[in-house]
Image 1 (cartoon, each protein chain N blue to C red):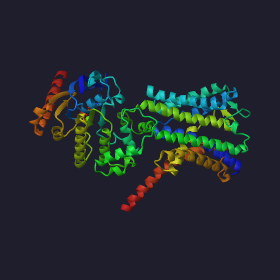
Image 2: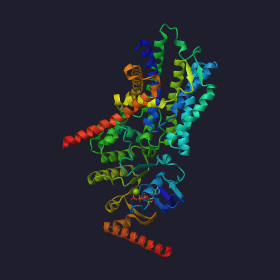
Image 3: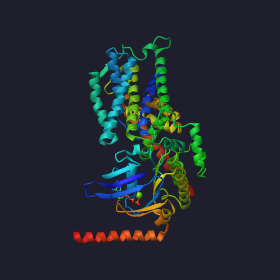
Image 4: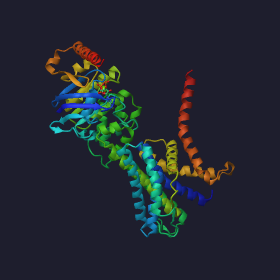
Length: 267
Length: 300
Ligand SMILES: Nc1ncnc2c1ncn2[C@@H]1O[C@H](COP(=O)(O)OP(=O)(O)OP(=O)(O)O)[C@@H](O)[C@H]1O
Ligand SMILES: [Mg+2]
């Protein structure tokens, strides 16, 4: 379970460029729930995921995993609970290490590295098995440098890597955005398989309304650092892509009106 | 080249092989350009020599020289990690401070070790002429050092360190504490360099406050030469190529200095080194550009 209480994040506090990226997020995601997150550019989606992962410190509010308060835990100490896949295929892997070395790192996620050998034949077998699920022929390229793989291949491996170590939470930030439609579909497919298999608690950010409605069981919409819409499974079943788009448009115009007000007051 | 000069060149090349491995760890593995080594080479030598002169066991003295140099690396890492000082600048600060510290440690600009016992003493008079024995001793040191580092880089811990230099965000997302790896890496790197300094002082019979000047460039030259000769993904080959690169560099320099028609003097060493490193850095780039140009021409 993930619980955010009145979560605030402010960038560049006190400077002219001050940005209220999250403004009081209250969110509870029960164990095993798959939530899709939508919202326009700059709404705070990535900030929310990064704050939950510990990359960004919250300026106010609390974060709990189950009943543990993790607000003060650094990112590295949350990795026992959290696996992630980033939007940028280059971000989730080390380009100048081999495929198997990358997988070995992910295999040790959240554990202290020892002076035992990072690779052995038993591990290679596990990695090969996993890679063969992708049907990309990567199982024969364990010792290829990661940087030689295409973006889609790298992203596929990142996804498998996120599942090598047990975790309870999976954070996906537009993890198919940089891929061609076919590869994106494959990655989404495998994501769903892994999520089901491991019964993960998932937050998936996406810009595709279709994906947002088709995956998971709940959809939230962020706007200017706030959750402006929270669709649970029952309601959501009646929603079409065009309904979501309407919500989007509404959020935009509301925002525009606010801006106009500001202008009037400021003038 | 006389046999004596040949063995001397080989010996220095092997000792600086340890420096090259240290430089490889910071520049290549951690992506942390560290100039501390100019100071930590001397520190290793100064601490070892001073302790030996005061009657300490040479092996203990060498160990303490190595540890002192490791601490210098920790200081650089601390300045960078704790206060966000740019890595290059942090290392220049430590290096500058070390110049004074080294003079203080020795109490004078240089310490002679001619008549003192050294790490080599137990092997003297075993029937092997000293000049061979010295080369074999430093070769064993360099190779054992190289094997240990290559082994380390293949462990879980070593792999985590490599990921830190490659992609910090990925490392962190996998629970790797970046700062810890940087501290350990800099301590290890400078420790190797300090060990090289301590060995250099004992095989050459002195420690001098200026002996470390240019260590970084020599180490870098060795790394680059090694890389361009032996392109490999195997950690063992890569680490050993640092030693090979260092030895080749020494022979290249000594040939340049000895070739009468070039008219170099011993004092031209730094210029030769800088030109060699620049060439080694520029050459792969130029080669790629030529290749690209040719490919374009062929397409047309
Ligand atoms: N490190 C930072 N420093 C300052 N401002 C930031 C920083 N990171 C994000 N922001 C700002 O915070 C706001 C929210 O950014 P965020 O990346 O969370 O948006 P997003 O919803 O993920 O958008 P997108 O759909 O474009 O990925 C944006 O206005 C952004 O400019
Ligand atoms: Mg984003």
